[in-house]
Length: 326
Length: 312
Image 1: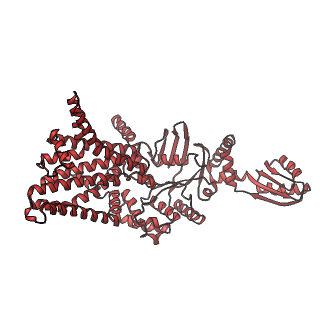
Image 2: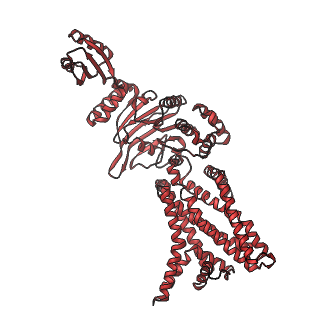
Image 3: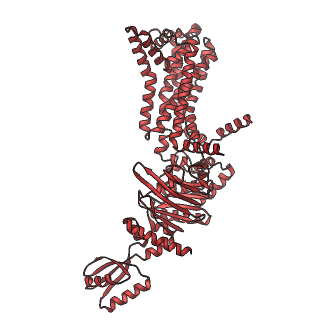
């Protein structure tokens, strides 16, 4: 539904997007993850026809963004990362304005306004002025605005940014609901775990290039292979670190002292249980053995920190994805 | 076919969502009502005082030539209002959208950059047009006492509307090309200042140089060009050609404007028609550049479509 072919965008000497190849299937939610300045917003802006690519092509459905932007605009609902609202309009008027701009009939506007305000839990605010709404409510209204013309594709640029935890959860639930409505959603974020819950596929972008792209299951499995474990012992932590470093499922010992060792573990939960038995058998008096940090976050940091590591992981993910598809 | 197309376009304009939204936002605020009332009150008071002073309280003494003077005076007051108010309204129409971060979303709707720019242009001048139309009943006082006929009033209003459109276009141009409304406002007023005052000063200096220079013809031509680009002088030119060439504002700026118009022979139909064409053409060019600026790909897409159509 959304495809890019060697998409490039250059600002002077800086490559904002480099040879980006994306393929978002119809009816799926695709998470587009990257650090600030990685090229997410530029890519989404090109797809939303706000910007021309330097080279390469991008399609929404069969429409190409540079040659048929009008068709693309009709097919998408775009929500930028930061957007304003018209202060002197009521919520109802705000939605009606955008509905009319897309050529939606008055009767349908009324019907959709009711439905969408109900969906984003703003039905009681229908006659309030837009500037009287909280930030979270305005974000939800923005999402309702995107859906006024019932587009098959939604492009959401960090829709939950700047929201409090409750509003983030509400936004997440609404987006999950969109998948059930059959919408294709391309959503960007710089927080990988946030997307894992609602996305079917995830693409990780770094310095304008896609470093990983796979289904959430593959990414999660890969993330689980890089779990950070903290082992606390009563004594002999340094010696235990030596033992652990030689263990074939321990990919790295991060820190160690006399009572604590932090390591990256690449095995399964069964391997983890066996490691505990091995350490106990070796005479170490274990106080705690626990997982620390968000797995997906660790993977994200791992992917976006070292280029070489990222390339290795990308090829590994590509291999996993190919295996899964086969 | 053509009638259907025109009807379709007119229907679209009547149903243009941006136009309706802009007019609704602009017209329903209390400030608009206050501004309209205040303007009408000031113009009414000025007209009353002018007439009262001229007839010293006895309306029977009012002569048609004096009502022509009143008309000239009011028309200059209106031109001053247009030059002051238009940049204030139009210089934030696009930069304001950009600052409020509503422009991005607007550009992803099917509304074309051309329709956005022209709607902004129409809504910018609509308030001023309303002010001008609102003063028509005051001008009817002038008709009541004779001295001016409606066609003359319409001709002067026409010239003022073209000037209003040009100022709005300049302001929208700055608003589209500059990111900040503050800068856009400064540049808009500066441009208006150059056209209204700068050209008058340049014309005056050129005249003085011409009087003391062997190249009298060249400097005389320069001053003629400066005056013929200035809306103040061109309004005088039009009014002079309509027969208001001898105002009673002795020793006033208005009378000096009229004398300059006569000395440079600017009160010809060609002079103010050239002015109208130049201002309308300039406005159109500025608005086209705004369309290009608003979404840089607009012309690239048109070019690609043209090539595709030619290859087909």
